[in-house]
Image 1: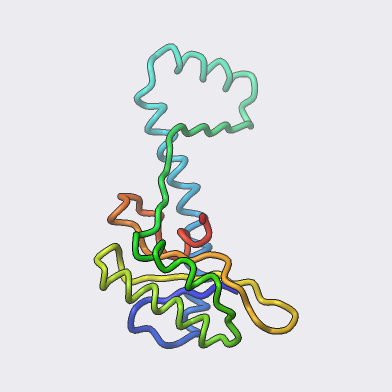
Image 2: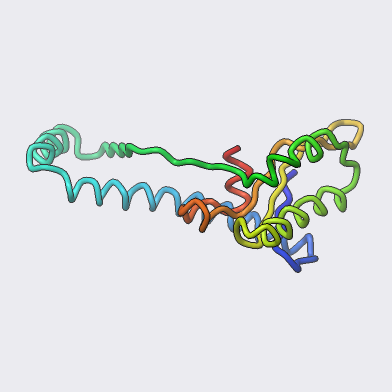
Length: 158
C-alpha cells in the first residue's frame, strides 16, 4: 500500500488516481529522459566513437543499446533522518494513520524549506491488518536539482 500526499489535499480516492497516473507518467518520463541523455551524449562524442557506433548499428539494426554513465544522489532531509526511528517503529492500523504520515511529511517538507509540498509513504500490510512502514519520501526536485525526485519516486528509490 502506498500513500502520497500534497499539502491541503483530503480526497484519498483522488490521491489514489493521481498516484497511479503519476507512476505511469514517471516511468515513461524516465525512459524518455534516458533516451534524451543518450542522444545528447552521442551528439557530443568524438568521431571515433561515432564510427564505432555506426559499425555496431550495421551489424544489428533492430537492437538498441542505451548506456548512461553518471551518478544520481538521492537523500532525505536532516529532519526526516532525525525522525526516522519514530516513523519506522510505529505500528499503523488504519488508512487514516498511514495517510496522516504522508500528509505530515508533505507539511514538514514545506515548513523546513527542504522541498515542495509532497510527501509519500509505502507500507506493507500484514495478515493481522496492521501495517509497517517500508519507505518514506518527499519532494526533493529543487534541493537536489533532479526533476525526477518527486515524493513517491524518492520513497520507491529508497
